[in-house]
Length: 362
Image (cartoon, rainbow, N blue to C red; front, side, top):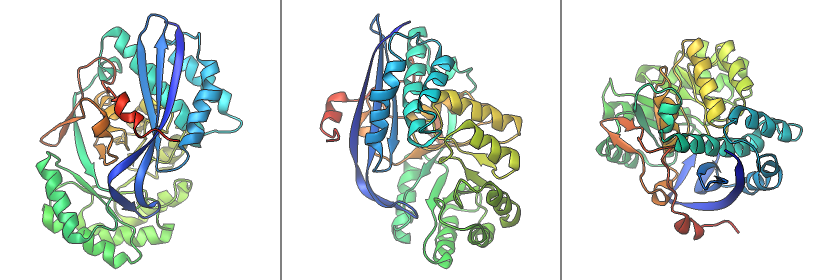
């Protein structure tokens, strides 16, 4: 199965409403970078990655100028070999960051291509566990007033979600605690509730926040501090008294190894679009399983539902509010808190390419 062509494009996707968190501020759009691989017999695999408003042009250039030459005329079935070829091609100037985003997009396309050619949904090709995956609504809502936050929560419940994540990381910890309390009272004691700080705090501040939230029985506190501080995560988990999720900003398998082996995370949280693609995501999931940890996810829920459907230690799939649904033929289905991995061959995502033309990056 020889790769005959690779096409990559770069889009700026406007959000239906401005979103906000503690590190990125107001978010009006995100950048989508797509990859379309085709073989000599006309089969096609599609992959993508994204950025939060900046850096997409660099990722697009890495794929088009640097990775394409290592993929054309290669055997698309040899995904591990191609992954290593891409990794070492970008290694000196990369080792993570935008290089990992570029490799991830291509890797997703390779797995999509392989599953399509075999006539299998991706989750079955990866081993298959359970097509029904618990899912939560991930709100990007730090600056949303509390009354609107509760109305947003009710809307998500009406859509079938049975777990909710909210943002924390305001200037005053007291405000965060009051909002978490209001959400807990609104949802009831046993409802799965998570909070996400987006790396806002120092280690000591994160410990104070975790202790302030302990009475509200969070399923996890996400990204309490910068991802580089492994020892700090160990302290937060040990001294804060709440489970910790982190990993959306870890871009290599070795970074996950260090965090997991040190005991700094309860819920490892890879993002398939920036950790190295399907290839690395599944390795992280199996690594977490070896440490008896549940794996969760960040972003790209239409792809990731397949990966968690193949992982026996899966926990919750994040449903991300990035507004991509209007460019996808069949968005993810949710029934009573469960996302359904589709039975369509590959990952099953069919982009509206004509519609995307209208938001192509200059």
